[in-house]
Image (cartoon, rainbow, N blue to C red; front, side, top):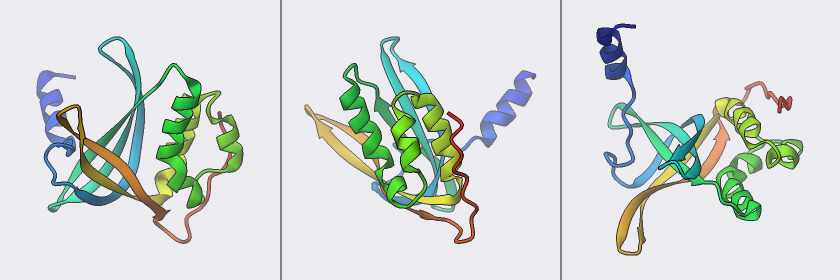
Length: 155
């Protein structure tokens, strides 16, 4: 791929909206969960939500830090998927297996969420004098009443 192709591709990319958009609730879809490392020492998962605002699409990113304490990580995961579970997007069997294979579970979760609309809240969080933009899922509902449910557990 040439530099020109890369520049054209970059121009087509959906902008990140965490800092550009006003605080509030935005409707969209969960499009990806990426496993990453920050500053070569913090393991994280980034939840990417594609939302519409001001006649444009944006990506809102929620970063979940993986804690050395498995119970704290489990709490972080439950905070992010509880609404999807209540909406029927995630099966109890998947939750039983989730913590033993988080990467596999999150792949399954993104596939399951393809037929669900997510409302995410973008808000300012003050911590130790700093203000950070945060994301929280406020609701999950089926995007299509006749959507086919894909509940096979590939992980």
